[in-house]
Image (cartoon, rainbow, N blue to C red; front, side, top):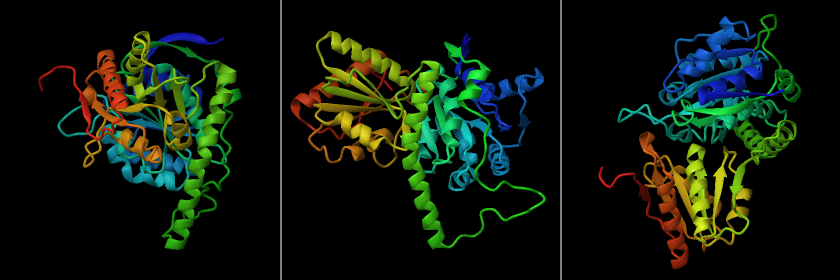
Length: 395
């Protein structure tokens, strides 16, 4: 029987990893991810985790350790945030291009500088093209469930790519919610032990790994990597459907639509800010405004077909970003959406940026965003100027 527990997001992530039975966990603490690492130490001390826990001297070392562990055929897990992700960039990129199915939770945090430890997906979004699958989640239940699903996605024979589960620092990592924790035997049935398909490292039969590669081979490998990303779209949906059937929780795969059947004015969101947007959509509906919402879950691979289908024939779209793309003066997700609907050039699209440095994106601000989208739709104007969502009038 499933248990009901009240836990913060880091604890939910640790429970998801624990239930997935990784062979090796290597992680270095960093705010706001640190409690997640502490939970693993506690599991080992209490004898509830039958895994090898490695305490590395840095995030770079953590990912390097897992590279070897995965090549040796182990199921591997780690987690990090912000500057830690930046420090591990070299092996982070190598892991994806070597097609190693490592799972890493990223507790999203702003990048330094100016000095900040507060939540925001600038860290992971900046590395969106490093070849990892990136799934962004809304609440603690989704953290737990998607950490489990991530292993099944990563290890699928048609994918074999590392997966990030990204969740907002402090808003989720340190906030408590009730979550359902599945039983171990149910998870093991859903996620059997990892059986690698590649040739495993063996001290008795040494071999060279990742040798100097000429351009013609490199292009071939990149093409296969891109094909695996395309396959991942199908696999993410299939794993979601299998999980929903077994555990009763459906996350809709690549994107989650909300009140979109007859929506005329749409907000697009990513991560925990979706909750405020959902309430704002309900309030707009009470006023007679046909508002809807699209929560993007998979940023990589990007759900191109789903986004185009959901946004065609809408009067206007607003994209709410908790990040910036330097040089474009918009958010990163806005660029992704604009690219996806480039042939739907009659749909006015409004870029919003807010919630930086851990600022709250309130329901009131989300309602303001909907008002701007309605105005753009009624005027049939395509907005290119970013609207900043700010709680107070002063700066």
